[in-house]
Amino acid sequence: MKPSMNAGNNKMDLIVKTNRLNTAIQNLTLAEIRLVQLAIIDSREKNEGLSADKPLTIKASRYAEAFGTTRQGAYDVLKKAEENLFERRFTFLDENDGYPVKSRWISQAKYKQDKGTIEIIFTPAVVNEITRINGIEQFFTKYTLEQTSMLNSMYSVRLYELLIQWREAKQTPLFGLKVFRGQLGVDDDEYQRMCDFKSGVLDKAIKEINKHTDIKVGYEQEKDGKNIIGFKFKVLSKSKPKDSKQQGVSRDKDTADMFTIEGLNDKQLGRIARNPSFVADYNDLVSSTSPAGQDMKVWEFEMVNRLKKDPTQFNKRPIREYLKYQ
Image 1: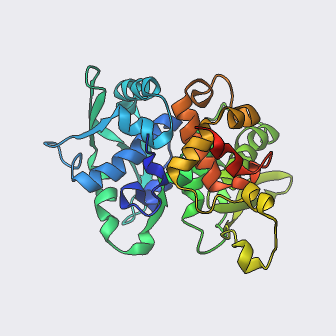
Image 2: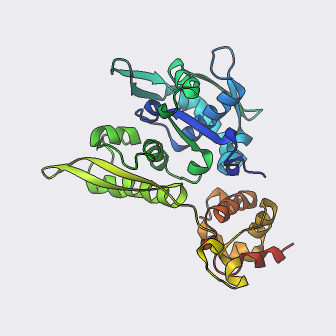
Image 3: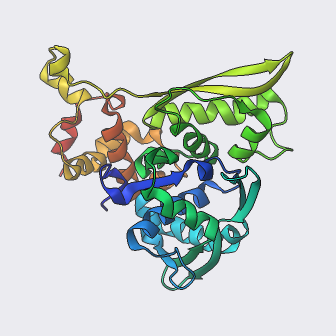
């Protein structure tokens, strides 16, 4: 299986949303967020789903490939999307008069079980945001599927979407607590105590973002007396790892092999991931009940991505030793 999300320079993987849509109050599940991400990409590329007479078709196989899930998992996502996504609403502020506007995400959904596809049509408000992406650049937030596909929490994806637009500024304005909770999709009766909100939502999301994406974030809380009224975030781009030659570091062959995958193509990385010794060494990286813990193809897909993102975590033996497996 060839994962499309690894093609970081491929415009097919680029998600572009207007910033006011990014800051909309959302209540989508993680699976629905991912489906909307795919729909934004595909609607732009295919020019479909942007009018009432030409719905956008998304295949279960497309979803499974992009996010490393099983086909059955993708089928379930499409089926639930037909049942629930139509009912999802969001709110954004009209840029002309500042009044809140309420909208659905899609105006139509049709799930074709026998074909493993769903057809959707975006609402006019969403279409307006998508079709504006050829406009003034600063109005939009850009990121790729690669950056969010490894995030396993809807709070992590939502926080990433909120913060990525501030990467150039390196810091955000104050996110007022009530609005911020809504933007993350936290209901009023959830995580009411601040310690629970920070440990169960905010800190977990930041940990996942810092581990799996291209930015490093931190925050400080602002108080009115003893009460926390909001948060400000620092948003820094991660520096790309330097080549050992540029650093002037001399390492022996085994050490170099252990920490680098230079010169290895996707086919070779896949062979490494399938090596029984590799599986035995690193099967503790995934849950036995997760798709990667049950399906070798999904395991291979996820491990190849992890090897590309940070090969230093695979340090139990030189990486190229696993190539001996046929």
